[in-house]
Image (cartoon, rainbow over all chains, first blue to last red; front, side, top):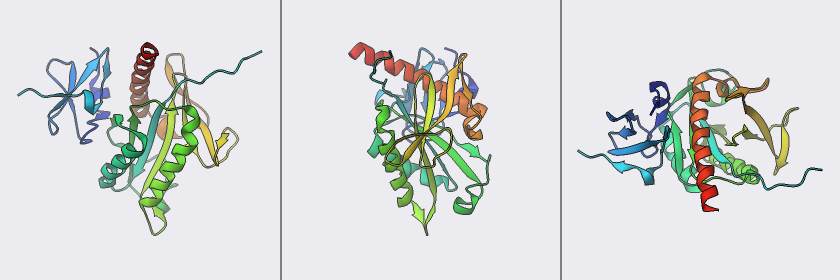
Length: 57
Length: 179
């Protein structure tokens, strides 16, 4: 997984259009507002609302 | 002799710019209703390479990109341009646009924008719309052309488009599996 901070800052949550950040495991992008995790597969962020997973608390 | 070929489906991209950022959410929602669910949405990019739009839209403009999930037929770009033009009109005030929407598509080898303005390098694609070859992909990266708008040649924009291209390539692989 090699997504860079620079690339991360280019993307937004497709649901709320707000900021997202790389999770600790560095395998997904998290939107705190929507409580959704967008997985990164093969270095490609999957920014589809229907494929996002709820963030576990 | 070359033989006619069915063109590959393309990744639909719209570039939007506006002064009032609050317009983005309702416009994006309407675009999703008309063009399908969204894929990658960019953060805000400054739109400060030109003052051409200031008389109509004011100063201090910002750009944002929306990519759509479902791949499109390349031949539908004129219809999509007309759809986005109508949306621009809907969000106009006193005959001035509040939002500018540039639809286009990406293939693995190029990025094309639709425009109503003819020019030497633009090809007519029907319904009063021309295709602007904005970027070509060669030597492992998108390359600008002499006529490429500077904001589409910006480093951040190119990084975003590279990500979109990766996703588009993944989309094509899924399509091939389904076929």
